Image (cartoon, rainbow, N blue to C red):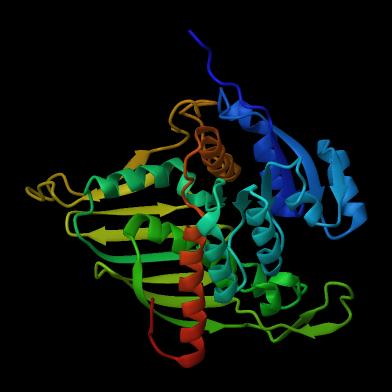
Length: 382
């Protein structure tokens, strides 16, 4: 009997090696530990950053074959099979189009691009593209949210009626926090793109498409210390806080909050959905549990069997993702490993990855409609 076809190692190039570039590299380097067997063997071939010294430091740290400051040496290289885009948001579009044109597999950080016109260019370019492509919407890949998706598809909620979700950070509450690139619209900054993209995707994943949105935003401090010289102050223009009211195409109405002004929070993504038959809720700061309320259970006598139930999802990933075991507490970076595993499985099987870049474009439409609503002070159709 012929043996299983062995794929050659997937040769990977990473654009950007700040915080999130290191997360992607970690997931590649450790994939075989979490998933045995890994869907495909990988090799970290090239890394690109904006400065020669940081590119060479990344190369030396993880043993990339080469380092460069020219992203085209990654996207156009015949030796690269997959491109990971981990750059600031405004620098996504040209490498994306180049990687598509050169037939690379693409793994892209959120948001897809820094504006609606750029997102449309990407979707148009995908029409004749045959590679695997995926967004890094890693919060779809926590056991609690994987289980939530199963329950929604099984009809546990009944007809969704309302929802409330928030992604809360606190870093911008300090007026002396330096003006990094995420404080500027020209770089694709602001909390809607930064963390709002995650919570909007998760809601789309669980509830389906939205039909309209109303949004208002706040920029807490018009000036901040310059990142290069803390004695100088620069004007910033990206929002620190956003409140959105959304309606799904099925008629459910709810709220989404994205904030970096939430003093006292760490990395708090909350999601709660209410339906005619039940409800679900999740908090990223308590990631080992999905909470479920079954409204079909009897409520008599004295409450009957009604009440919120905590489902111990902990580290219960489907096989072969069981390491270190289903009883262990799950961690933030584990969702990134699972998200990348999904991408590699699609490459190995020659199938479509989900969420693909089209999902990134759908979230982009919602976010840009939110900005339009904030400017015009009106509801915007999606």
